[in-house]
Image 1: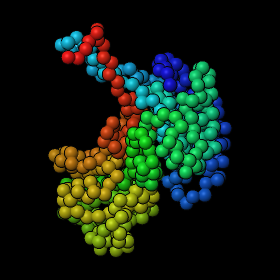
Image 2: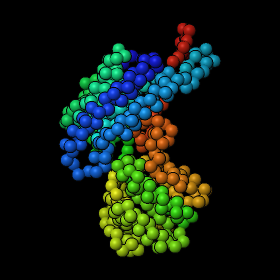
Image 3: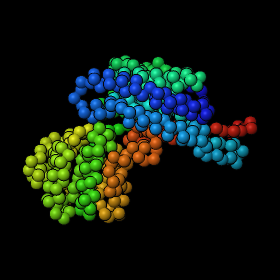
Amino acid sequence: MKLLNTETKNNVLTSMAEILDRKRDAIIKANKKDLDAFQIEDQALFDRLIVNNKKVDEMINAINSVRLQDDPVGQEISNRTLKNGLNIVNTTAPFGTILIIYESRPDVTIEAAVLAFKANNKILLKGGKEAYHSNIILEKCWHDALSQNGLSKDWIKLLHLKREETQEFLKNPTEPLDLIVPRGGERLIEFVKTHATCAVLVSGRGNNFLYVSEKADWSKAVNVIINAKTDKISGCNALDKVLINKNMPEYETKLEMLQQKLEQYNVEIIADKSVSQQLKTVNEVTQDRIWYEEFLALKLLIASVDNMEEATAMINKYSGKHSAAIITEDKNEALTFMNNVDSAAVYHNASTRFTDGGQMGVGAELAISTDKLHHRGPLGLKQLVTNKYYVFGDGHVRT
């Protein structure tokens, strides 16, 4: 796809915001068809599917936010002239064609496309069948915005492929692919990594941990745990595991207080052997694999640890390397924890629910990357470019 100037790209985004506002009733009506057809017993997936007036407003706000951001393409990273006279300029450049594969969430059809397009990338959207009607009308909105500004509809395109067809497309793409972003559970990620023939940037699962130090303010700990667990259970930044230092003052009493608070929010508690002996009414963990699970439900695993080193080791072994938090009043302890935990985002006395592009000041996000190469954390506009060297000479030859 050709390199577009900033004005042209922003004009498309202005048109898109206006179209979404004008067609909001039709969008919500199309979404209702998907909601009515939804037959899977998965509350998190259903929650992600819903489009209402608030969600349309969020889509429009995402588009306007990206429109107001600086164009990430053509930004100079470095510029130096060597002793031999060669001028070497390193600048940002588009990836080319990005494929994103995702489930439910029609808002991804907006946020992924607006980011990719502003960064001058073509984007292929492989949404889930549960959001078919929602995605169809949103793609039509994009095509109207592109057409109004004299651009090809190929910039933003939905792929309607079954699993076997997707597998074949990944192995033998019918058009050049430069980057694939699988946004979903481990099965989806493994499927893409197994079959893709180009770069894959993993938007990993959550399975987020929180460690409560013996030096914690207990009131802060409880408030953060409740927010991180119950604010939005379908979010990949929701809390799944809590590790509590058994050496804290009034440990048993505080455990019981936490249980009572969680039960007020209808949170199912499971626990390791030590905690389950203290909290008689909770189920004990019987299989190791549950430590690796992302719950996406009102469910929380609570375990005891002897110290921060044990907590850190458990987090690095079992977590999805997405977000992890420590609750402590000791800043040096917090920094040690944050330096040693292997996660894309680490928190001191704060909820994991802040691992989000908008909350972190990035704006709209394509995904939360748990990979270490290219970028880690929220993938915003500035992260959807690569780099390119421009070398200027005057008949230079290497000797």
